[in-house]
Length: 158
Ligand code: ZN
Image 1 (cartoon, rainbow, N blue to C red):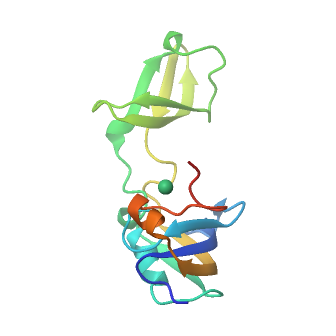
Image 2 (image 1 turned 180 degrees about the horizontal axis):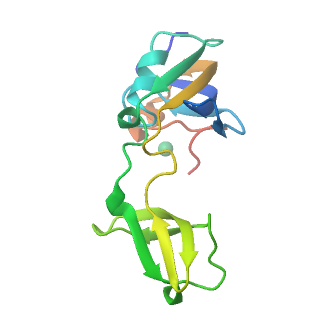
């Protein structure tokens, strides 16, 4: 079966920086509903369109096609006293940005009584290489199409 709109695609992936450094790898296969539902990056869907199980590809995405450019406005510094004890460099916490949207911040550094946070996605601003391997392609169920995501072992759990 070929990958087309309203198929459920199961794949494994690795994400590399343009330098070749491995940033992330799927611990187990993941499934998504193909066809512009916003479940994965549009350029990845375009690369997979019309392919079948067994297909492997490496797709390079510019920042704008992946996690976006870095936004320096998402760098914040906050007094340490506003944090629970145990805040440390490299840790992450969820907060709200200026627009009230929930956002994950990474602790960049702690200097004196000030904690410096970065609200950018850790992969923002990076050109990324996705190594993909398609394991399975099947027709999605009507329910999955209505929900806009895949159910089952590697999909969405309700
Ligand atoms: Zn659902």
